[in-house]
Image 1 (cartoon, helix red, strand yellow):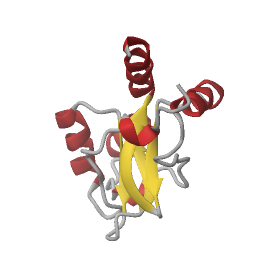
Image 2 (spheres, rainbow, N blue to C red):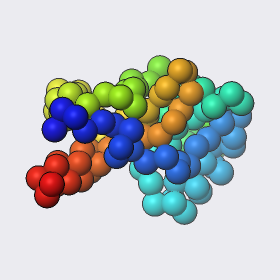
Image 3 (spheres, rainbow, N blue to C red):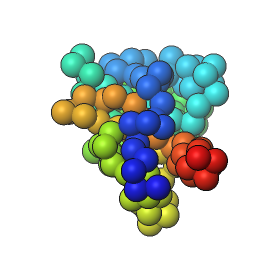
Amino acid sequence: MRSLKVKDYMTTKLVTFTPGLNVVEAMKQILEHRITAAPVVDEANQLVGMLAEVDLMSVVIQDSYYNEPVGIVGDYMKAPVDTVAPNLDIYTLAERFIHEHRRRYPVVHEGKLVGQISRRDVLVAAVDYRDR
């Protein structure tokens, strides 16, 4: 499986957010697209953070408990973000998933977000390899 690369199995059509997006709008998009997290990018498509469902729990608390304005994605996103390169082999990525307990990694090439790879994508690669 060392010859299988991240770029061959990553998702390239991603929902992304900008740091200045209203966080409630981001929450609506996460629900609408049935995703658990999305990359946050700047105007140059450089990855600047990740916004996940767990990050949005703070919005729920702030809005309902403290009755304060909720703000923007940049206020809640996690940064910096662990990433992988498109040419990383699937075997090495599988080891990272085991040791780092992540669900997904953004894929970055020359500073730009080019995709995302999940644990499920690694399983697809493994099945594809077996079926060859």
